[in-house]
Length: 150
Image (cartoon, rainbow, N blue to C red; front, side):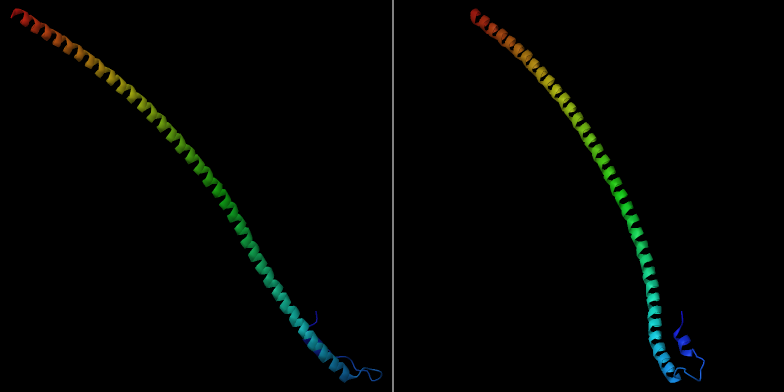
C-alpha cells in the first residue's frame, strides 16, 4: 500500500507537448495526499483498534472459560456436598431410630421389672395380711379362753 509520503514525493516526467499542467497535477496530488493521509491514519487507527479488540476478546474468552470451569467445579462440589449431607442425615435417622428402639426395649424391661416388683409386694402384703389375721385370730382365741376361765 502506498503511503502519503509516496504520493507526495511522486514525480512525473514532463512532456513538452500535450502534457498536463504541472501546477494542476501538483495541486491534485496535494489534495490527494491530504485525503489519502487521513484515510491512511484512519486505517492505521482502525487496525490498532481491531488488534486491541481482538486482545480484549481473547481476554474475555479466557475469563469465560475460567468461569465455565469454576461453574462446573461449583456444581460438582454442590452435588458432592448434597450427597454427603444426605448420607449424614440418613445415618443420623438410623442412629435415632436405633436409640429409640433401644429406649423402648429398655422401658419395656423396666415396666416388666416394676410389674414383678408390684406382684412381689402384693404377695408379701398377702402373706403379711395372712399372718396378721392368724395372729389376730390366735389373740382372739386367747381372749376367749381367758374369758371362759374367769
